[in-house]
Image (cartoon, rainbow, N blue to C red; front, side, top):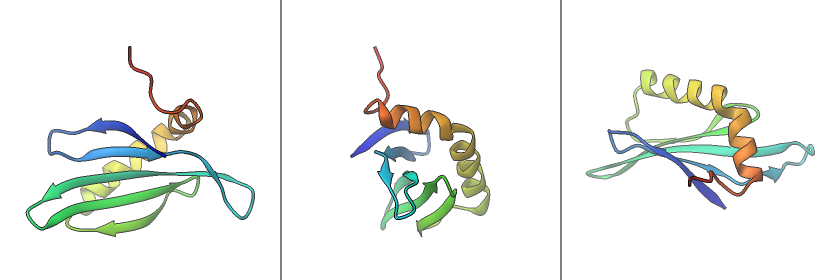
Length: 91
């Protein structure tokens, strides 16, 4: 399952996944950033808890990717919380 998080003014949409258990018994999830382009999408995906980029395609700059990394690192506890709750509940 994938849950919406935010959509930025440049059309980048951010989603996060439900929690999975990896082969080491760790809870993992991913946070995916994607914006439409004329030829498809710019995309980058981070895996938690390692913060590794597991997928990257398109033309996000290194500066944008570092900003995304900060969002993921600072938001990690919330992504796990919201994934356990089935997404962000907005009244």
